[in-house]
Length: 386
Ligand code: ADP
Image (cartoon, rainbow, N blue to C red; front, side, top):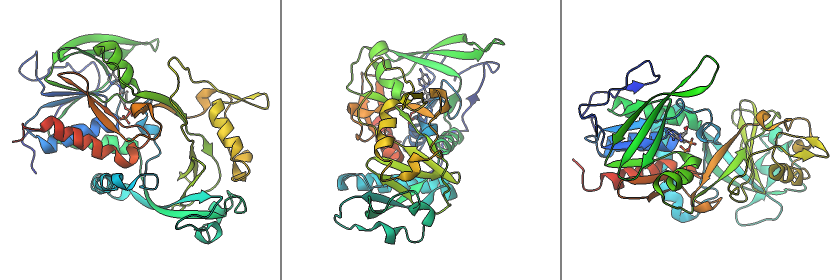
């Protein structure tokens, strides 16, 4: 497929005047709010399904935004936790990741560690025979059985960048450091943000655009934005997920380990822990650190409890290798969208009104996000293919 357009433009800062297209009121066919991996993937998919549509991708921060869910997502693509009905979409996503990331996509074993034998389990000691450093993390008496799956690991932040850059090469425009607010009737206000010399973020200028299609791809912010700005109530929710560091050594080919909902992802020669999400966080929840035997930690209480409960099975968690932090700022964490308010729901898209769609990634975005973005691109394109 060849692009019908010259490359798109990028406005990174307020010093570059924003001069969209020839029609100042409605210069774009599609306006995507949020350039995390979901918004960026949608922008790219639209250039492929409908190269005649002119798209603007708007992002409040940079690419990728340091505060978004994308940059801290585990980046593990695996069907290990998906029902058979989702496997085709996962395989499609994997092919697409291969095409976009090349060597940045790394195959790795993925082991689910169990206390009981089950279908296709093998002894943990056998499966980890070639990985003594992995075996040293756990107690094989407590987790004697394991099931091996395939996984591919990658950096979701790189995916967002590659997808957005490919979309720009095919004609998509990108407006960074700009907060977008959707309104009913296909109207969007854009506040171009700048930082004063006293480090305050302020609005430099405001623009109003109209577009026939608007997509809210703002991750965990999307449900509240739909409600506040469009008056559309959804059942989607969000949860604050922290991903603490475990300073135990890992090699390039170390398997991803998964035990009782906790995932240990080998990364940068050590491990990133991805704790289970049990439920949505209540409206108004402000992330805060917990206490372990009276000592303040940066880890939230629910995650601490999960890790303490796993210390028998994974003794490495009971050592000083686990970074508990002293306050929340010490532990990487991000708000994650929960489609339908469910911790195990797959990525989804909804129609909010005549003009606006919602695109949500959430906990399974690593494995299914690209598929769902492509599905929405096909829906938007439906009937308007060239
Ligand atoms: P996802 O995995 O769904 O892409 P992210 O949280 O990584 O989720 O991405 C959502 C992006 O949307 C973030 O980069 C965030 O900065 C951006 N965003 C959120 N609200 C707005 C807004 N009002 N205007 C522009 N960008 C926004």
